[in-house]
Image (cartoon, rainbow, N blue to C red):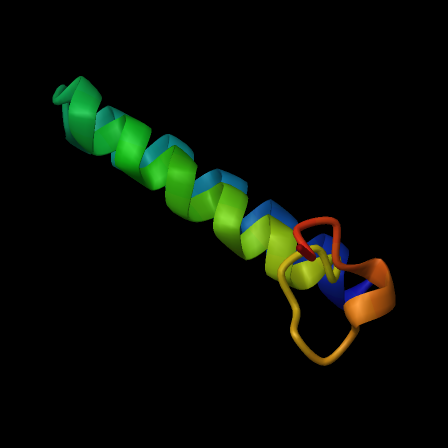
Length: 57
């Protein structure tokens, strides 16, 4: 549930960023960054768990 709380915090921070900034490019950048964090959290981009790595060549 630590991961769940981190997810909630990240989503809330994204909402805050979106409300503070009307710049769509900045919001897209934040979304991309959130996707990266999401992938790391669930082992998709984590190098220490290659068996869960969907991006392995």
